[in-house]
Amino acid sequence: MKAAYILQTGDCDVIQVGELAEPNCGPDEVILRVHATSINPIDTYIRSGLVAFELPQPYRLGCDASGTIEQVGDNVTRFKIGDRVWCTNQGLLGAQGTTAEKINVSQDWCFSIPDQCSFEDAAANALVGVTAHLGLFREAKLCAGETVLVIGGSGGVGSMVVQMAIAAGAKVIATAGSDEKCERVKTMGAEVVINYQKESIADVFQKEAPEGVNLFWETRREPDFDLAVQLLAWKGRMIVMAGRDARPVFPVGPFYVKECTLSGFVMFKATPDEMRICAEDINRWMAEGKLKANIAERFPIERIAEAHRLQENATLTQSADLGGKIIIQIQ
Ligand SMILES: NC(=O)c1ccc[n+]([C@@H]2O[C@H](COP(=O)([O-])OP(=O)(O)OC[C@H]3O[C@@H](n4cnc5c(N)ncnc54)[C@H](OP(=O)(O)O)[C@@H]3O)[C@@H](O)[C@H]2O)c1
Image (cartoon, rainbow, N blue to C red; front, side, top):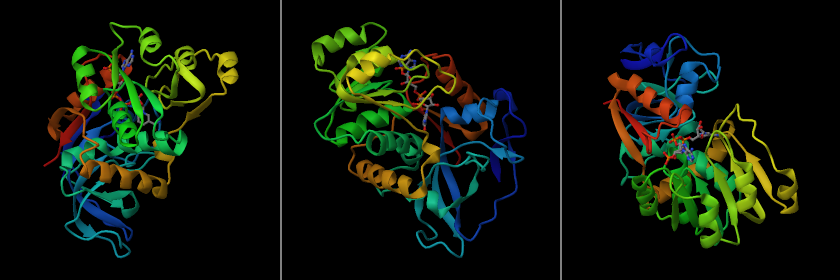
């Protein structure tokens, strides 16, 4: 079967696309005929060695996938052959990834795709959707009527945070890096979108939300705590989830005097039960049209190295060339 894999970490040229042996189905697993996968920044960190996991040889790239179940293991109770499912949390902590014509996945990490949704949309929303849900609801306990600021509303995670916060009844203010990206974030339902290339976020706040925000979601790899604490309301919450090497200055005084809270998390440490809670809302909102995939680019599997380069440049050098998810079309 065709797969995208690496034999050693390195730049995008280490990616090979070729034939690998088909996977075996364990008793708790399903075999998925993969239709689409999506790229996440973590795929590029693992490929380059920036995040070092002990990798199987060869290591198939990718965390997310969607497809059709072709085989079920003896203990599988939740799915049957022919079901359309999406999965995430693959390719991490030394496990095999998803970019192949067929993959074996534990039933615990698979979730049904609503009838109305395409394979591409399900793959695009997988890891980023779970991330947004964990942060908004498990960590920040967002309530209807609260105000959320999303730094990076046009990105993979940011666009999920924007739409989920709105679905939960919050008011959303977001930032994006161009007028076109701002327009797109507005169509997702954000009330105010700030083009941070043209306007100062703090200035817009003086006008739009002088009382501050209940939740500040930072997607950048260099969190700006000074800005966050300035814009947070009393007892505001802040989410950080990016920038392993970041060591920014933290304004302790104003933070505790405002009685704020800071949460950090990584999605891949969530349990299957925690992810199932996320997946149930994701699927319901996708079926209701409240959670739309934010797909920016599509590449056939043969061109996955280009896709990695595009994602890597956007993440590490903030190239601004990307405005959403990259889909890898498998078949
Ligand atoms: N902890 C976790 O579990 C977890 C899960 C998923 C992702 N992550 C991390 O979260 C980060 C975002 O992931 P992603 O999938 O959303 O990536 P992405 O799709 O590439 O989005 C990155 C976002 O950053 C924005 N951005 C770039 N430079 C900016 C700047 N100078 N000021 C403000 N915004 C800026 C981009 O918006 P514009 O182009 O509009 O500027 C874009 O919205 C990555 O570092 C990733 O590794 C962590």
